[in-house]
Image (cartoon, rainbow, N blue to C red; front, side, top):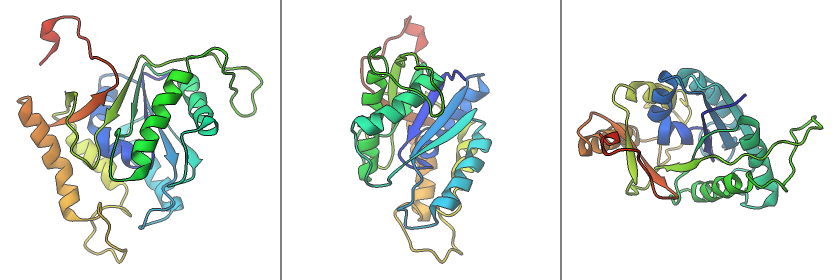
Length: 240
């Protein structure tokens, strides 16, 4: 299956938090989008890997993505090395996305920056013909594929975006997809330990950050991204 956009996240819920509204908008505009989670989030303070598996699938259904995979890397301990790069290369070559979205280049959680560089490096390597990969159980060598662009969504830290996407009208879908992870986010009745993302303030911040970015471009809501190379436009009025 060829996808237009493939979004990677170090943990289930990373993609929704960083780019959920953008993904919902792209799908509404007819794009095929997939998500690949690097880990099952098994070191998370709240919930469990099994619970996160179910929440991730529910969230994927809310967003309407075409596919969601999990590479089951070790939460907290995966590395940007050949072994892990090859597994991501297999996914890139399998789905042949034009655009890849991935974790923030730096962030509070150590997996986010590491996941960012891992996916970015794999996107480059995936285009090299002398790197041979095969999907499990298949004998055919995959064809090389390099995405046209890699964009990094913004997470805990307020990194200055290189561009923002107007997501007005799609923030409700994003919030529903996030709240599918009921084990992770604010619930006044939960007996689980408190975490930085389980507070009401964090949940509120998702909306007010999107509103603030929207304010900067004179729209209701927006999501921000950083880039790896210069962003080009075809004509001046491509900008809103």
